[in-house]
Image (cartoon, rainbow, N blue to C red; front, side, top):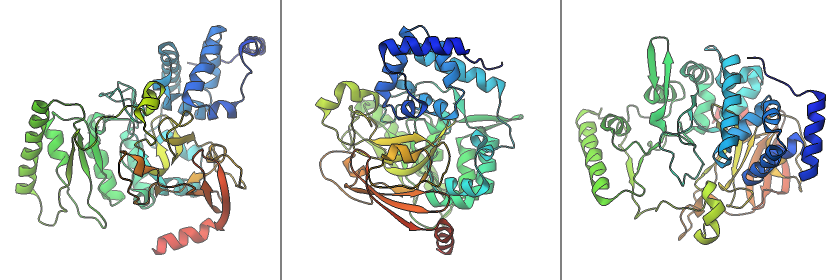
Length: 429
């Protein structure tokens, strides 16, 4: 399928129609829209009868694919269906290659830039969509798996950039269920377990797992097993039991105990301690007030923080993003600033800049967002840490240490070192 393009006449018609309702927005302005305002803007264009041609043109832009995909759960049903149909058609026209990296990143970034990116990836979303589709998902997972990162591309990434990925030790899930992952390689089917093995073999870490696949004994057995010892803390394993009745929760607990017994019986004495964590409503209830539920319940929920606990780079089947944890707000209803990465440029970052603007052209340093702070009382608030908050931003030639306020504005900026020296010191450590 050849992507269609708007004619000059149709473009002018769209601009005129939109102007009657609302000022037309630039590409940069659309990328900065909070999700609720993005939906409003698309609705305005839809009311002008021009949404099909507008989205067809808009989704020629990789950053727009990333942006609309990330906030898809916020879109109206008609908008969602149209976005999916356009992206699916483009995917069929330009399929990924097995010898490539995810998203064909090698075509967009140099090897030096890729090493910088992979050094700061903190989470990899293996599938777009989630079989569970929890209604109050804090990161707005859409229900139903539509797409995945091909296993061959993940293998290329871990084999070539394993040393870099070891730094951020990324989770292998985001707005997704880890056990959903499936990728056919010739006659062989690959699953999450195979990707987990790539991380252990080439990046030398055992990824944490959080899952809602609570009735699959084979999957729980896998979660309860740590196969290799690595330097640092042991891996965390979490089964989500939010909202379950006591009878169901007891059934899950029995399956977990069975997995423990198997693991203890068969594990290598040199293996690290098994750390399967079962969350219960008594520990953290399934809270509304973040993600799409922010629209209707945040004022009454009293939440001020989301569940995101890391700053750095996010990789998904639809895009690559910078993310920085901030308090919940209308602009940041997940409690994080999330921006697609356009490129890595030598920009001068100064006080007064919006972090949203500079995140499109820099790489956010992988950091635990709360630096082990503990806040009693409200769940998740510990993830935000205190403000002004320190964030490190990387450009091709320098690293900036900036302080941001709760709204994501830079209040202080310091150019602290050359990246070449920074990388040399990192390797020595």
